[in-house]
Length: 108
Image (cartoon, rainbow, N blue to C red; front, side, top):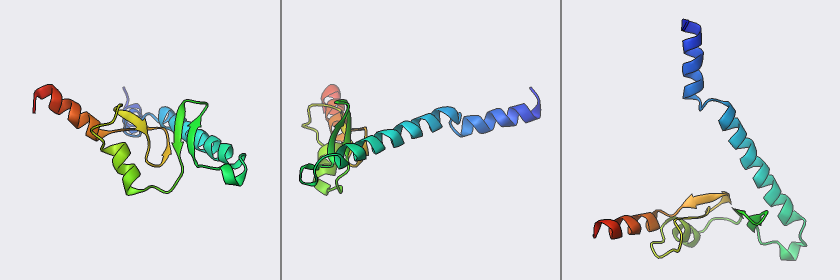
């Protein structure tokens, strides 16, 4: 492999391959736009700024609160490990639930 090809390959690897990262960024932007459009199509009094896109992807566009952050990021009592983000589109990991599961598994 020539030095130029090796350098190009190393740059692509360092930047996430380029293509996948760009694709995921576009998907995230499209989902965010879809969430905003969904809310703006509702009468103003009915806009909640949270819900699901296509009944699958959760979105949360309200101003984040400490209570919501705690509920979604650190709730050992939660049913699921993965839930809606504190702000934005998609899912987040509830580290409180993960910690509780690990502690239960190792008997702490």
